[in-house]
Image (cartoon, rainbow, N blue to C red; front, side):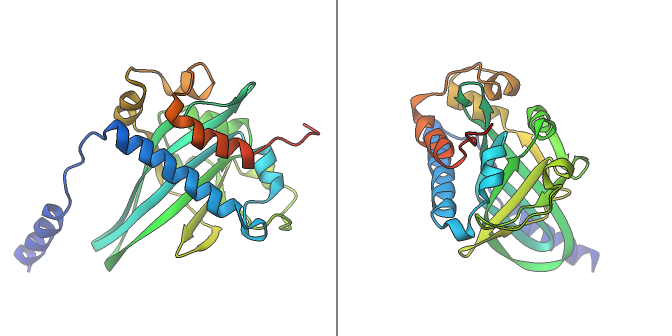
Length: 229
């Protein structure tokens, strides 16, 4: 029996290709995919992120097509991008990766788009870390949906990150506690052609390359600060 289980795990492992360093074209495609996710989600206001949140957002992360796979044990892995609000607009992007796992006898797979929004300075600081676990030092909650969604009055005080998923056209809040968010340094360095710290980029100290502008313009379009701020 043990030999059979080992054999199954070997087959599953061999089916997963080795992760190669991404090319710049692949990273630009990832930015464009993240831009499309935001556009499609925000194009239907009644089923989008509430304005109270988009106006208060300090950082926005998008992981297009996060893969959830299961064979003997379940797991999630996704590659995405993050930008943060600065005194002169949205920062150049940093590339991130998200991983998680769940045990259980499952077989199947599904790609899901994820959106993370930091809603206060603590959430911003969490994203400046090179690696953190959602729910362990970084409080998170499933985000509400709809421009006029009725939200608890303390959502901003109690949650640093609000999280959503979109799968098969359905956009809804999701609990991502236990998921690890880490900077993808190789991808970030490849995109900029040089090393910059995540903190320097997200604080607006690094100019965004032209290839990042469509994504950043889309974030700026839908995550505008309230005129009252």
